[in-house]
Image: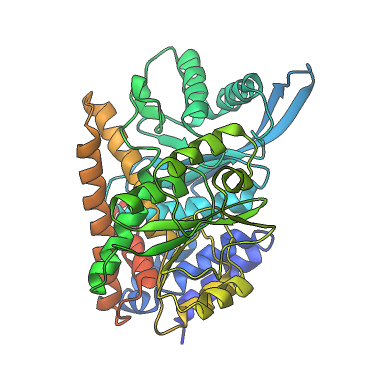
Length: 449
């Protein structure tokens, strides 16, 4: 039975955030894992720790006004949710996508807090973005929007305050425009204020691939735990952006292969594997702005399934790499029926609540949570911060080795936390407990702030 304090807090949070479903789902998922830990620490209730942790330290909403190529004034809404800075400066991506709203920004910031804690690096949690849609926009329009967005954001960020990075709709190109405007306003080269920068002005090696690489390193640790091998395994991926691209690259390097990719238009099935030149073509697809995975099918002659998702395709491992709520209850049932042993979340909250409950209930399936699996991106961003601070530039091999070590530590700390709390090899609960513990200790040490 769930701890009474946790139950009460969840009830209060549901009343307070009734119109924020994504945020409510992620808070409930984290807090429902903390029974034994909260039982061991009655002082949490006395100091209102769970209530405080579920409330952002600062939520910023602002108007973004810009001019399109036709000379028309456009207005979007911008956000920065600085969720928790107990263990370091706020850190988290900026997302440009029509789906962006306050609930999504809050859920991402909450998740980011524990994800960043898991890396063992001194960074807090934040998230930001706008409902601006870069698809179909000219380069000039994207630049003008980025500059307008930074005109407000610059007031709230800094190398020791808040260090944003990219996310959906915000890659190295957009980070360049954002940083250029920041530098123009500040009149200083504070390159530690943003990560995901181009290598020519302070960016880190392998940052675009880092989330995908880290996810595969995490899977390799699971395989080692299960006395399994990566060699020859097939992976069903969703998405075809940076994350799926990084996953596909590292899978090929380790002797496995991706066999599906997806987009808003459907999914492709390539039993020969997304390998070699096909992986590089993913970059061309992404940069085209068409957002159609069918382009891959047309180029390489494999099957395309319009309007469908790849869940249920016969594969050894399922890895949703696209966006939130990508796997619903029906999709989870298909995955469960496939006989696969491994369900690895890569995108942020890609699984609906009922679907995740179903998959976690399968005795023979290992489920790994996105807050742990996709932490390689923010870990490499933190490594970029270190390089900027020390005026260093590590090689690709050096960054990759550090990333691999961090992902192993994340897996091991999650597994140990689950085991210590009597939950066996439950990586979802273990990641929640391990990520929570460090933030909780820091908040307690710093008093009521």
